[in-house]
Image 1: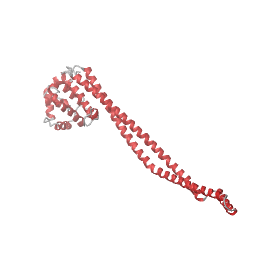
Image 2 (image 1 turned 30 degrees about the vertical axis):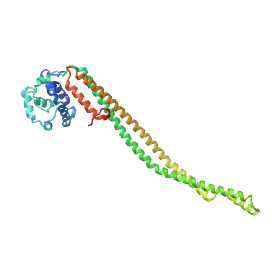
Image 3 (image 1 turned 30 degrees about the horizontal axis):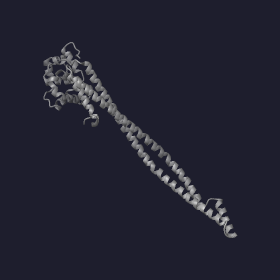
Image 4 (image 1 turned 90 degrees about the vertical axis):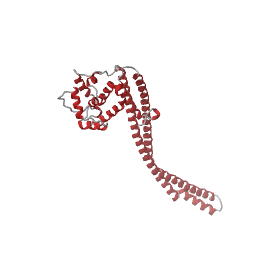
Length: 332
């Protein structure tokens, strides 16, 4: 993986056009044996560049002068941007008349570690391109799975919120439905009571119409005829009340039933999304383990781009923060 350019100065310019992260990885690959102990700082440098590059963030390749000063202050570096630029001109990394627009991280690293830019742009970046590409592909797959898991978890949370809202709506509609049911039951009980009394009077009249003297029997027959002619007023009122209670209960039942069905459907959708999120997390956990095993195998082979491998390993470490500890995750 060589840099383009007809001379080392042009190659250095092309290196500085790479993203913050790619410049850092390039430097690590070149000087791994010298700076391995500082590898975590390089990760922090990338995070700070992403934060301070207000326009391009992680896709940028340099900081403006003000934010370059902020970067240096954040890591207690005593160098100044002026010193950096003078040093680069003196070393030949840039032309004497070069106009600096930004401060790439490569400028800072060259000055900090006192390295020769000619060496930086010509040193090997590792021999095993195929395995490195495979490691990157596995990392991208891990990141995609975690993104899917996050999306499924967000979907599950949103659906749970909908389910809870609909369940609350169903609970609120349950009260008038229950009240209507109680009224209906009371009306049914009253009708039964009135009918029992009415039927009891009829049976009594029938019995008296067949017993005793003529006057007594005739009086009982008249009473029976009046009873059979129409329902007594209390029974009529009870039946009217019952019909009203039935209509009221039916009216209350419809929205309660609909709300209950909506709540049940929302709860099921929420549970389905939760299971999908858990499945995505499981798939991500399996892929993390697979990627880590592959990295450990590759690292033991000679000629590897150790800086690039460290970066993949570090990004896997970050990804594991989104895994439950029970599945090999780590605390944030």
